[in-house]
Image 1 (cartoon, rainbow, N blue to C red):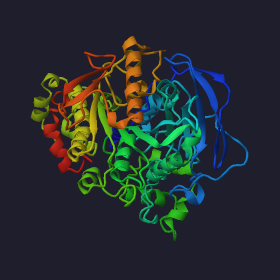
Image 2 (image 1 turned 90 degrees about the vertical axis):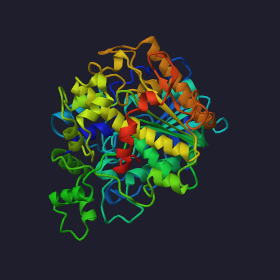
Image 3 (image 1 turned 30 degrees about the horizontal axis):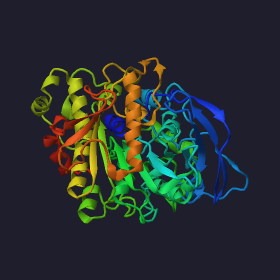
Image 4 (image 1 turned 120 degrees about the vertical axis):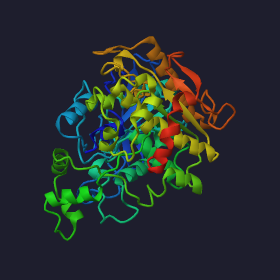
Length: 541
């Protein structure tokens, strides 16, 4: 099993419990949709810069339950309801797939709503959450930020506490939408019986949710003409797929990819048939119909307990037609402004969880985790001379650059060369309340609490610092500012412009509460080695 790559490929479900977003109740808001009336809750964010109320609508269905004959199938629009829908509780996560054994247990303990009860799970899970400032209305529409969570398309949910959009909505006067979508076998069954163009039900969930936004967000005070995608890790990768294979007509005006990475490859069809054989479906007239009768939790348990390989994306001509480089070459790639970035120490958390202490063998680690090329010790040490005597730190930085920094560089360079507007950022914020183990640094997903304002003011690791609070306010402002006026971009130059060989560094040593501009070479030097290897191996979008 590609254990480390599994960890490397998901948007880690952060250690923050969202305690910074403390709420007090006020009057309940409503929205009238074509499907029926939705009743939300109104709360005030009491320890953020603004105390203005925010309207939260939790668990609004955008599709029918993907159960029974709808399992593995494309989503269908939600059915109407007659009584007002009480959208006041977080929806269950879709059924998630974690690894078994100690690594899986540690992953769950750290990242599945740590410090709080884990989210409920259900096959009936196609819901979304909407957070809107109180002043938003059908006659006073705000820019919309549409979130896709990470999880290597194997797990994750919009219902984690640190995806509470209250702070971002009320402080920046935007409407925030966070959706659930199917993952693992339920989102990527790989079944050959599903017609071409209708595979990848997870991606089709995302597209249906975007369509729902176009049709309904105005009733919550959002502007369907001003939708910006943002997502992290696998969520960033999925946004890349939306850009490379955009819906028609376009349903978004801009995109933000936080630490996008290439999704892990898996066994695909072999995994599907392995599951079918276990449940006596191999000889059935329709394997698909047979598997649809198996209890969903039985499928989940078998896959987890037996380490069944990844259920991966397949080319379907709809959500996955062209990869980004081919899409850019053909002119199909969405012509919208884009922000792409990564964190300084993405892989420290994966290396820690995988127990790669001491001096792990570089090529054994790469090969064991599905990376189809090797890197000599001499090359690695020449790239990272200061880490030559610390094997764990060296491989952590190598994986950070190989899988995140250089994939971001490859994609952003290609977008820029196509004449589209793209900016790069690097996140370096490292704060006591997010150091889940010593020397974690700016690890994978640790920027999310700053963007959402869901960092904890105090926890077992430490307290929020003045720099952290200020950095969060700054990042919320520039993320939301981009959603409001994408063409205006960011405070640093876009690639390809005058001084376009620079990126914005957030939370760096010189500006820990804001941004400093640095030459790309300060972070991208290893990409001269890794970039060609990634492209040759088909690993870089």
